[in-house]
Length: 640
Image (tube, rainbow, N blue to C red; front, side):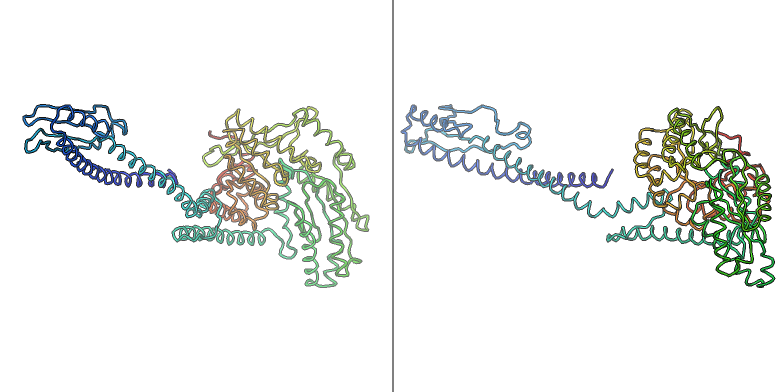
């Protein structure tokens, strides 16, 4: 029961008790007063009437006429005259029922008044005894009206007190709403802080909760900073700050095997020709400075694009992976220009060459095939000299101009949306003891009798700015599947879900109409998009969770320093990118990384799910590290 209802009940009970006491005291007092007044009136009227009758010379007719006239005034219940022997001479009595007050009231407060008695004489001779009793209905009327007035006054006081108390209670308890919101947020793993209220009791409570939230945030920031530092030390080149070869190749392999927008992109190699001679001419210290500038220039390119990665593959070869980019020459030119600017700044441009090889990779390519293709193309570019850029083509569609490819895909998507050619695949995500967590549902496209994976067409969806429309289509499909199958389902949302102004309103309408099916949805966005649009992601999480959906982030691990910002989001799960999962059973560095990441994730109450688990050895090792669930080729069976 709410405090407001309890306040009203308390006021009603209290004033009812006060009214009851006042009613008893005032009614008994008024009853006693009225009885006393009626008795005095009976006595006085009896004496006056007896005196009037004494002057009638005991004439029987006159006596009766006088008694009748007195009784007819309407103020008497009984007027009676008896002779000295008790025989009735004259009697007038009103036997009508009292209607000036309810019967229960009359029964509750009976007015019993002794009649007035006086002697009627003729000279010194006694004529008779006069008995007179005034009618009590006037007393009941007065008593009932005073009781009604008292009840109305108490009822008015009760309403006024209730309304005033409710108003004051809302003012006093207004900080309680903030406390409740904070408590609910903490229960949802959103460790927020609020201003301390003026009320002492609430201030102490809010202070304690704020302290707890701040401690969790501080610990989370400290752990993520340590985790990010460890990752940089283990995965990046000490001189250039670029990824080492092994983690870069793991990221490339994970992209080639992924089933999302990152499965298609551009891979570029640039060789700094003549670097060995520069080292002999300028010395190790100067060349280390040059390499540091090269790394800073490439990292600046990477920082402006989500999920791009750059690496120093060996002494003079640098690589840039650009997911979602379908213009290899543009990427290679940007990379080459960045290196050329560094060389020019250090006045070494005339002493080096910057041959480049670039290609487009697609879902299903292998690293061996891709690197072989690029190595041969790079050798050819180096032999041609003059910092040549060579594009390694593999497939007719890559040879088409970008505008022509866009026109092709625009027609494909228009027909697909019109004819409902999108569908959802289904891959189990299991927890410990093979317990089913949910099914991953990547989108598929039927095209000319073939089922295209998401990695094949999603880059063109983004390029044509149709991602928001696809998100809506996928969510509608997922809600229907969740309703029919009755199992939890996870779907991937794009950046359109965060930047499209009307998407949240549309999502609310769909989820509110979906009923129980909405609570079976697991919504996830890529790590890069979630952190780039963090405030929009928080709003999306709050809206989706209000309908029972679970919200998470996929491909986690590339922006570990940002995880501390998730303390007030209320996430349910994190999916660790498959590049950190590959060969985890033999990679001691990634084992340390994942063990710490699990500790950080569990500290804010989220579950950790590994992506792309390919073997039982990897899954066994992940469980030892603290991972809560997994998906991938090795995860095929589960327990409902």
